[in-house]
Amino acid sequence: MKTFYAYARANGSYGIRNHVAVISAMDNSNFIARRVAACVTGTVEVCPCFGRGEVGADLEQHIATLGGLGANPNVFAAVVVTMEPVIAGRIADIIRDSGKEVVVCSCDECGGTINTTCRAVRYAKEFVIKASEQKRVEVPISELMLGVECGGSDSVSGLISNPATGMVADKVVDEGGRVVLSETTEWMGAEESLRTRAVTPELGQRIVDAIKWYEDYIISIGVDIKGTNPAPDNIKGGLSTIEEKALGAVEKGGTRPIQDLITYNGKVSHRGLTLLDASPGGVENTTSLTSIGCQLIIFSTGKGNPIGNPITPTIKVTGNARTMDSYGDNIDVDISAVMTEGMELSEAGDLLYERMLEYCNGKLTTAEVLGDTEVAVTRLGYTV
Image (cartoon, rainbow, N blue to C red; front, top):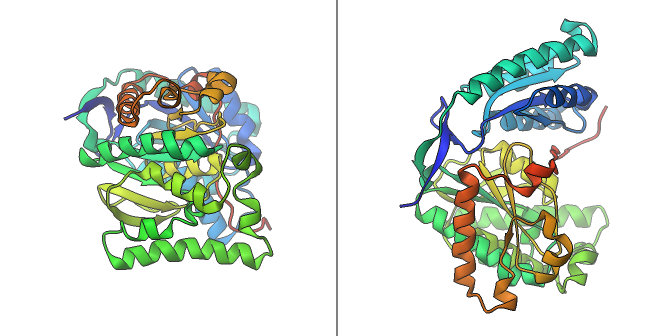
């Protein structure tokens, strides 16, 4: 049985990072979060778009997502900065309920941005010192929740990097861990493949219905999904139809039975493979995977994609040798030898699995080192 070394949390989860997160409650306090993170080594900044003027389900999704980012097992403690304390307080409550220390620093209560920054820096400094005292403990793979993602897909994605990622997903599931496959609109054309893998007929129909909802929505606004997906870069990479793209995309989830389909900010209640109904956009999707608790993301890319998440390490893997030539600085795992040197696909899967364990144990991803990280909460409505 494979193991990795992680930080134990009060709620029984394990983090592969020990971040102190400086979370901006809304876009009008992002600059405070950035200043605090710049002052205190060992912190990461979480700066969303929007947050002010959102109402109803849109506001609730914003709060739940930012709270989920702070509650992620990779976070030791959090400082929430804000203009006003009400929304920030609700975000902090979610983080506090996960057993973490969290404080809110607001301009309304501190008196302007300078005072707020100073107070937040003091709290962040103390949290980082406390975090530094923690030691990693050995835990089984069953304690891992892995998110799988793809972006900048090409024909090689479906032939090499997505299947190799799926092999890793199967290994994690077989060890008792959790794997989350998302990007609902990327499943269009692969409905039957997913439906037949669901553990119940009812779940299979829910998956089909979730995909159909997006298809109907796209048609309702007068857009032809087949005219926009595959995107121009996908077509340049050799993908000709949405079905071809989808059948490659779902390879990331491996071959094991699908246990559940959850909505944005839902709870992963089952071991094994879970589907997450969320946007396919790279920043939005890595945000949604992180907010539900994934400690690690494997991001398969064809032509290349640099984006990572500030909370959850995002491993970039490609099977395209040309991408290694043009985008190699942003790639963590190169398995293009399948295409160029006769490496077996199973060997590529084994290599990616071993590399995944290295990142679980503390190795930094390229996106982390370069700071190529962003968050974005998927919007549901207009700002009012």
